[in-house]
Amino acid sequence: MKFRLDRQRFLEAVQLVGGVVAPRAIKPIYESLQIVSRDGGIEILATDLEVGIRLFLDDVAVEEAGTMTIPAQRLSSILREVVDDSIEIGWRGQTCEIVAQGSRFKVLCENPDDFPEIPEFDERGMFAVPNGTFTKLVAKTGFAAAKEKARFALNGIQMTVAGTEIACVATDGRRLAMMNGACENPDGVERSGIIPTKGMSQMVKVLTEGDEVIRLNLGESLCLAQTRRAVISSRLVEGQYPPVKEVIPANTTNRVVLNRAEIIAALRKARILTNQESRVVRLGFESGGRLLIDAQAVEVGEAHIEMAVEYTGEPMRIGFNPEFLLEGFGAAEGETARFELSAPNSPGKIMDDAGYTYVVSPVSLE
Figure 1 (cartoon, rainbow, N blue to C red):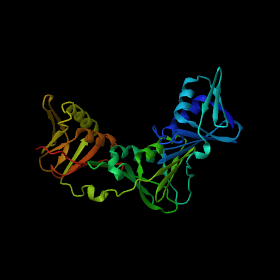
Figure 2: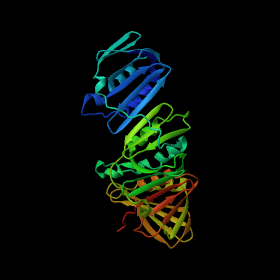
Figure 3: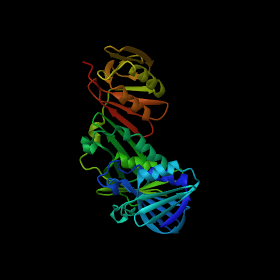
Figure 4: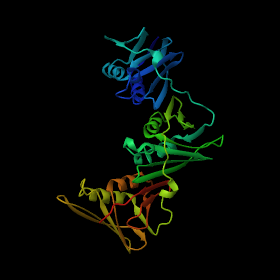
């Protein structure tokens, strides 16, 4: 095989696809990219056996069709160091030759026949989500997913589609983020599955301004996503997700309307006077629309901040992890956000008018 293409464009594609590759794979072939050249362009493939990607590049001068593999990190390093506008890639036996002006590299590679199979997109049961909607769904929920691998089912985003509505939910057991949106569902699919955050993140990364929608297929064990230039496949996380309806407080007695910029600024100030042993801010809601925010830590100091809010309910004090509140209010949209509470030992609920809900557990003040 042999082809020539723009070096910078190729580097960007290799870095994007290479983000899927496991850094310390059990076999060298899993640290490699597969490149398939054919009339009209090349396809770059990568997988870590959980998430796979097929990225197509057109406007490539293909002299000879074929298939090759090459270590992802090594190819990326070469492309970064070479400064030529275009480069030539060739493959003979199990050696990849990269030719640029004044430079020639020969890289030993694995057998392409050993590269894992990466699924193509399946049109059956497909539904489509607008680019902007999908990006919001991931951005406003993914941060709340569990980071600890032992949490299994919580290491992903639960996606549910029914009719023309799609919802994404993520939780780590201490807070939960949910976002709703609209989708095109011509086959009336009703499905739900937990997609790893890595897979969802990769789906967002391949989206470009030219993609009006991302097409999705949510199966029993696999989620497929298709854009104009790429197909992403992601195995679903096994396990049972917490019952969302039971987690979100339904009947709250105390309601607050806050200016988002003001509450974020106040929480940032209070956070300065916390530490690892005392990662808590105390919110005191008083009749008349006054919110007192306090933070105190031994050998650190204390902070006291006051701001005006619209408050309905009995006076109460409640504690929260400031990071969790900042992320919740930061993900909400609009000038103001609603914050609903029931008791010092019950979760708080942040909402906006764009379909976003965030539930956060309190911290004991005793």
